Image 1 (cartoon, rainbow over the protein chains, first blue to last red):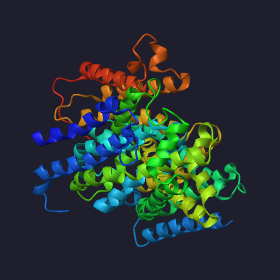
Image 2 (cartoon, chains in turn blue, cyan; image 1 turned 180 degrees about the vertical axis):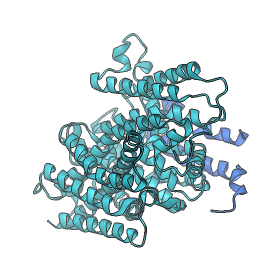
Image 3 (cartoon, rainbow over the protein chains, first blue to last red; image 1 turned 120 degrees about the horizontal axis):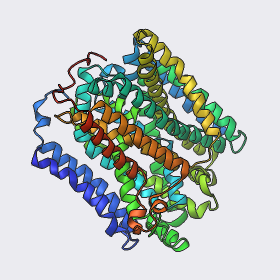
Image 4 (cartoon, chains in turn cyan, orange; image 1 turned 120 degrees about the vertical axis):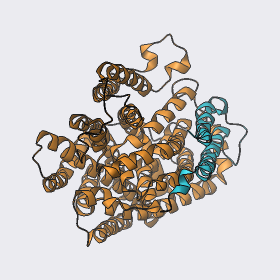
Length: 66
Length: 491
């Protein structure tokens, strides 16, 4: 278990835990109710998180085939 | 009639692509159902994405935004979290599948637990779970064709036409056709959804912000989760369950076999979540429809996207939207049909009659396609659920396979075949009992706090499943159990 894998737990906390605090309409962000903005933000952050994990994971450097 | 003509042009294009993909390929069972395991990042992305952008997302997600409001947001979240899991879940599954030349999801269980009977059980559970998913696609097809004909074709006939088209398509092309049509589908659906999701709020309200303000004014509390029922704890538990169940669908599980290398999945885990954002625009359409075409009740909310389209655009645009919708039913529908047929032929029939040859299994699989289509057609005509409730039911069923899959991937054999089988049976029986009787956590234990009462009932089934799996495994474990090294030779 590589330490960088722990990053994978972060989006779960943000969405499954965060929803209890983000369930509100205001403030509107980018025209969206706050709760929807919160979830959209996390979807984008998931992509960012997975990029970091992908880059730091040695498993992706070993194979040369694509 | 313009709209219908455009839709049929889409259908013709899909069938032509299927025929083209087939040419020059020797279609044995492996070619027909896992494409010879030669698909790179793009195609696996498309096939698995083909999974996500189904009629369910197109019509179901807008329908839920229209009819239920905030609870629809869950659809945006669960697949994104499933991709996070896929980074670690899919590579070992793919590696094992390649090593043992597996074709279906059940093959995985057969090989891992050295038990063809467990494979049959998994195949049956998978097929039972896929039926509501197929029904969902057929219902969607029916909605699209009947709305696009402006009432000239009844929903009944529309569904029959859709089923025939789907069956013909699968029989002709197998998975190669699915991959190519997935490409066509993704391009059109992306264009259609982005256009509708941006244009409609702008046209009717002057912008997305204005639209949400108007909805909030007309329907206070509609844009946030309610304090009971589909509350925050319902949301969290449903997202978690669906994320776990995401890759347990037999067709998704085996679509992952088509990859060229395990790296494909790790790379896809980055891009797939962003692709989910398309759903946001589907929600926008649903929310816009609340004020533009009000009054659709219950399961009719699924019509909202098409109703607002017919109310806003000339017939040829309706045709393009309908054509995109047709593809969202055709691609996943064909994967579902093909997978159910392969599962039944290979993992149920062949276990009962072990002398069946590979060629016969392949032939039987193709014969089963229309049979399964007919069964789904029957259920489509005899049930009134909305698209999302159909999917949630299927998800509760396939999620029951997760404990056994996870157990089989551990280095030490913690889960035995008896444990896996009883766990799955208990989980599925619980889901069935809950679906038939309609109980919720709240009605079982009225004294619990609201946040516990609103938990998705699938959680109970999964918890029972895990307990039984571990208990029975502990009781049946042999002291000197070797890693499943026997009988794995192409099971």
